[in-house]
Amino acid sequence: MGTVYIPRGRPSEGETGLRRYLLASDFDQTLSFNDSGLVLSDMLGISGFVERCAGLSRTHLVQQGAELAYLLQHDPEYRRVRREDLRQVGKQIRLKRNIHLLSSLLGGLDGYHFDFYVISAAPEEVIISALEGVVPPEHIYGTRFRYDPDSGEIQSIERVPAGYGKVAVLEELRANLCVSADRLVYVGDGSSDVHVMLHVNRMDGLTIAVSENKFLTPIARRTVLSDDALSVLVPILEDIAGMSAGRIRALFSSHGFVLQEWDKIRTDALTIRDSGPSSAVA
Image (cartoon, rainbow, N blue to C red; front, side, top):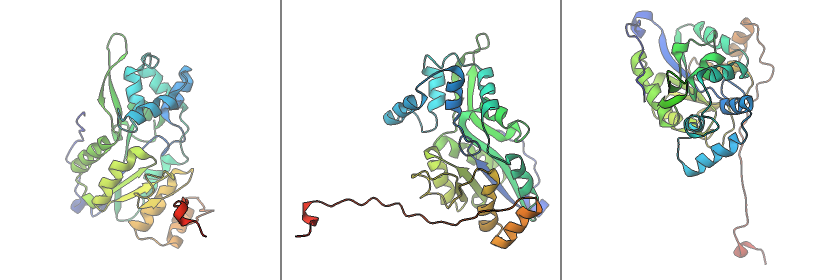
C-alpha cells in the first residue's frame, strides 16, 4: 500500500477552539448511484461485469470492493483500459444531490471542524473526475495504478482501499490530521465497508450506512436512506452536535432546504421455517 502523506503544521484543536472531526466517505453508491465498474463496462461494451465480480467474490481471491481493480490488471477484455478511459467514466457517474454543499454546511456548524475525505476502492481517476470542483483531489484516496509510460497500459496496482485497506488509509489520515479516535465519522453502503465500520465503532466513532445492505446495517450505528448527500448531516447533527429535530429542521431551512419527509423506522427482518416433523401439531 502506498504511503498517505499529508503536510503537517495544521492548527491544533486547542489553537482553533474547534472540536475537530474526520469525516470519511465511500464513493460508489454512497456519493453516487452507479458502480464505477458497471459504467466502465457499459462504456466499453464489455458484458458480464456483475458475473465476473461474483466469481471473484466466491473464490475470495480479492478483498470485496477490489474486484474492478483485479479485472483491470488481469482480465484480457479490461486490459485495454487506459487512464483517459477512467477519467471519462468519472464524467458519466451520476452523483447524489448536493455533495458540493456537504462540506460548506458542516463548515458553518459553530464549534466544530470537519475534514472531509473520500476513501474508496474505485479507481482514483474516476473519483477525481466525478468530483471535480467538489472535493479536492488531495482529499481523495482511491485505487491507484502504475501505468506503462509508453503504452499507457496498467502495469501494477499501487494501492487498493478495500476491506482492511480502508482502515489503513483512515488511520494514516487520522494520525496526520491529529484527530482523536472518537472523532471519526465513516459513511458507506456495502460489504467492503464492514472492516472500517467495525474499526470506527471500536473507537467510539460514528458509522453511517446509506443502504440496507444486510451485512452493514447491523454494524452501522445509524442508517440513512436518501438520494441527497446532505442526509448524512442528520445523524451527525443529532449524535455529535446534540441537536434536536426542530433545530435540525431550522438549520436546513436556513440554507433553503425542507426536510419534507423524515421517517425514523426500525425494521425487523425475519425468516421463519418449520423446525422439522417433531414440530408438527398432532
